[in-house]
Structures are given as C-alpha cells and as structure tokens.
Length: 104
Image 1 (cartoon, rainbow, N blue to C red):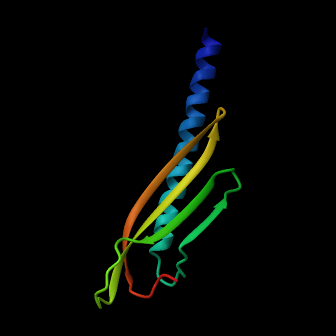
Image 2: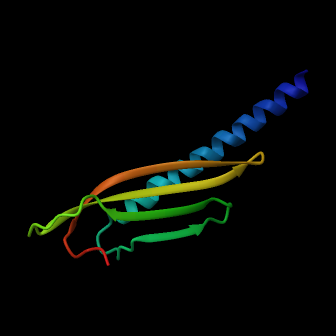
Image 3: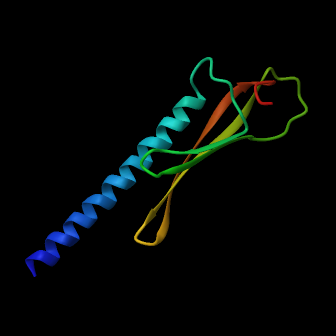
C-alpha cells in the first residue's frame, strides 16, 4: 500500500513538472515574438532536448483595407508532449500590435 502511494505521488510530481516545463516554454515563445529586433515568421516549430515539441503561429487578427500604420496579429504557442501513452498540449495565445508590413 505504501509503495503504491509513493509511486502514485512520484508519478503525479513528474506530470506536474512536465506541465510546468511546457507552460514556461509556451510563455517564453510568446515573449520572444514580442522582443525587439526579432524577425517574425508566420510559423515556426521545434523540439527541446527534453522532448517537448512546440509550434508558434502568427496570423493577422483581422484583414482591413484601411491605411493604419499598425495592425493586430494573434500569436499562438502550442507545446506538446507524450505522457503515459497520451498526447498532452499546453497552448497560450496573445494579441500583438505590429507595423503593417511586419509579417512576410
């Protein structure tokens, strides 16, 4: 009984640690899209050394025909990992104000 409880506790701790790692990665990816001097791309993806795969997408919030010098874009950061045979995902999104010609 005690070994089962300890095993369950260790498993829950590992799951929480993995979810926290995914959350921090998603927050970092969003922050990087807002950093000065970063060249924005509509999509990027990769994998960490610890096996988390990530995908960032930037898309226009709304198409407008006006002559405003800025436009809004939605940034979505998804982080995926495998946990006990199932896929887990942590997703964050943010709204950015960009110069009209910032996205390729």
